[in-house]
Length: 508
Image (cartoon, rainbow, N blue to C red; front, side):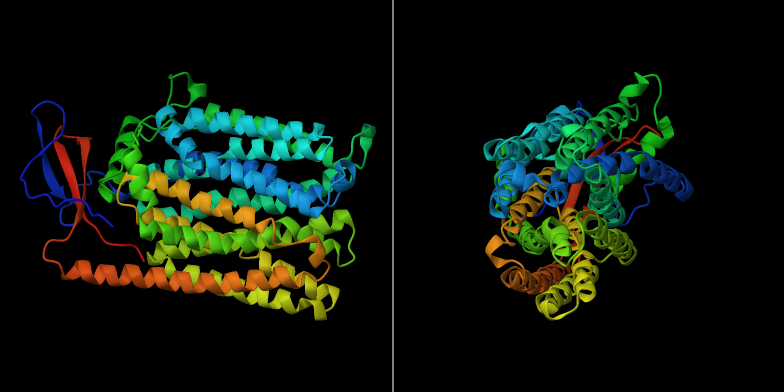
């Protein structure tokens, strides 16, 4: 991978007239002109303002994307005249739509701004999710699934990049985990919500699965309105749309601390709109380290998508009713939500991602080994095996995102890399939707064997990537002139301009 050039000059041009910015080595100089208590206070504000809004939007995305698993326990297949394999095709089209527009959407986000672009996306896919209730045939089902994917494309990487502008690297794993709680809580509660909605039956002549799309699509549109009204536009601008510019979440002092603390942590970060060129895209796309992170997510997420989509159906096949099966399917995601926060906290506390990743990967390996043998067991033990497999859910993918973000050297690279890793997750959605096949029912031996093999591959991939980073750091430590990441900040509180410089090391 290319590294940033080493600065040997004693002064750097800021790009504003002939004024020069003095280079400051962040590793050896104390340049923070605020107290730890001040920084903790502004960080708490971000945690209670930005994170909940982004997490709520992620909840809506997963709810609308994943409610097909609840609809499958209703009469959707009979009403549309389709089978499980045809439903799989629709799910694959949704993931394909996301993959197609993931990078273009993220580039547009940088031009338009996250507040406008992401909120527009939420309202758009909410309307599509709502209008799914009018589908009457297989063609209409395929069209709405593809359109839903196209509207959702770019939201997750856009939100992740937005988060990276607010937080330091050592704070990112826990916050990414909390952000993904929106996903995991949606997986858990959507089963409960779905159970409640489906219990309405065919009220007013409308099938239960149609009510599911009506209610949850309406909720999403409401969340989109909340998003555009209350999300602060950027780190340097804390005035949400609802304020009409009359007030801000942050004082001038707090805004100053927010901007400079992330730049001191990573001088290459920018806190305003970012320009991404075709060269930036190509350089990032062919970066082998990023491709390995993408492979880890791809391999780990195929089993996740498979068991999440068909978990309620597998539980129902054990002899439970529709409502009860959906409610029972929520247990795994609740356990996963707890696990991802704990592991995310451990990553930030230890400043290491590899141990948590390996723990989750080995757990997944054991879980699918149990599921493959569960056909010999009682219904209660089979259910426990399903919950066990859902308990790690997207944990590997979530921690892997934080690992990749910490190892991106430039903001352009980070923005594109976030899109790439979510593309990997959605490509896994295409493959994952084909794992459980109609002809493989009711034991699904081929499905569980495939998930087991992929889980084993993930363990090997994580170990290989960690070894690569470790050996690369050893090589950097032996160099007399280590590569650095550089950037130029605005004026400090006393009116001076400084160019920040930090030695580069790979995060393990």
